[in-house]
Amino acid sequence: MKTIIKNIKEIVGVVDDQIINYKCGAELNKISSIKDGWIIIEDETIIDFGNMDNWKGVEDWNETEIIDANNGIVLPSWCDSHTHIVYAGSRETEFLDKINGLSYEEIAKRGGGILNSAERLAQTNEDDLYNESKKRVDQVIKLGTGALEIKSGYGLDTKNELKMLRVIKRLKEKYPIPIKSTFLGAHAVPKGQTKEQYISTIINEMIPEVSKNNLADYIDVFCDKGFFSAQETEKILHAGKKHGLTPKIHANELDFSGGIEVGVKMGALSVDHLECTSNKQIETLKASKTMPTLLPGTAFFLGLNYPPARNMIDAGLPIALATDFNPGSCPSGNMALTISLACIKMKLRPIEAINASTINGAYAMGLEKKLGTIQKGKIANLTITKQIPSINYIPYSMGENNIEKVIINGKIYYDSQTNY
Ligand code: NIG
Ligand code: FE
Image (tube, rainbow, N blue to C red; front, side):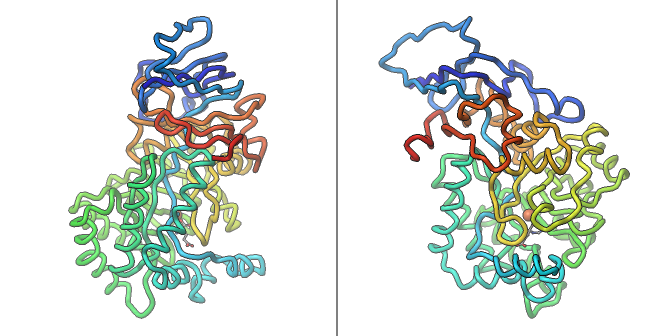
C-alpha cells in the first residue's frame, strides 16, 4: 500500500544519499529542505520525495492513500532519548517546597525526590502503573515524539525495578514507535541500606535478572554529588557491559562529578544533563563518539545553570536535546517546549535545536539509520504542522501546539481536526 503526502509547504530535514550518523559543530546549523513538496511512502518506509516541478504522478489511485498536508511544513518526528515516563503519581508538593526556597538536594535529604517516587511506585500494581504511563506515552506521541527512551529507577529493589522494566516492555509492544529501555537501578540509594549493600544488589542480583529476562537495552547511573561517585559508576557500568548493556548515563547535573570522563571511558552512547561542564571536558567529549545530551526543561524547572551548549557546538561537538520527562525535575514530555527553552536559554539557533531533537536524538538511541531525517529507506515517522510561517516559528511560538497531524509508520496516528 502506498501513501502520498501532498500539498506540503516545505519538507524540512531531507537527506539525499549520504549517511549521516549525527550532526556536529557548524553542520548542526544546516538543514536541507524542499519547498512545495510531496512524499511517497510504501507501507512504513519513505520511498521518494521531491518538489511539485518533478512530480511523477500516481500509478494506481485505488491503491494509494492521500494525506493532504494543507500547506503545512513536514519534518521528522522528535526523537526523545531521555525520559522517566514510567512513574506513579506526582510530586506537586515538592514543587511548592521549591517555590518556598528548598533546593533539589535539600528536598532529597528530607526523603522527598526519587525516594518519594519509589515509595509511590512500590504501592502501585503493575497494571495501574502501565495504565498511568500509557496515558503519558499517548500524550507525547500526539506532541510529535516518534521515538522514545524510558528508564527504570523508581523501583530501587529487584522486584520493583523489574516491574518498571516489564511495564516499559508492554509499552514497547503496545505502541508503533520505537521505544528503548534503560535500567537505572543506580538512581538513588533506597532507605535502610548502605550504598555498598545496594551497589552489590545492583551488580549481583538486578543486572543478571534484567539481562536474563532481556528487559533493557541500556544501563544508566546517576553519577552526581550525593548520589553515585565516578568510581562507583564505573563499577556498575562494567557489570552492565558484561551483560551486554550499553551505558547511557546521568552526568554532571548538580556538580563536576567525573561523570563525563567515566562515560567516555566506558564508551557510553550518551552522557546526559551536563549542566556542569568545563572546557577540558568538552575536549574529552570531542575525542569520543558519546553524544552530549542536554535537558533544558530540567534546568528550567529546577532553576539550575544551563549547560554551556554554545561552547560545546562552537568547539565542534554534536548535542542532542531530550525532555527528561519525570515527576521531580521536569514534569513535561513536550519536545517543542524543550526546543524553545534550548533556543531561549542556551542560545541555540532553531535549526540547531531541530537537528539536536531529530537525527542527534535518534543517534542517542541507536536509531540513526531508521529515523531522524527524511530520507529514502527510513521509517515514515513525521509531523505535519499547521500553516506556520517558517520552521523558526516552532521555538518562537513558545508553548503553542503547532501540530496538525502525526504520521507514524506511514499512517495518520493523530489528526488535530478530529482529535483522534
Ligand atoms: O534526570 N537526575 C536524576 N534523575 C531525574 C530526576 C528524578 C526525580 O527527581 O524524580 C533527572 O532529573
Ligand atoms: Fe533523567
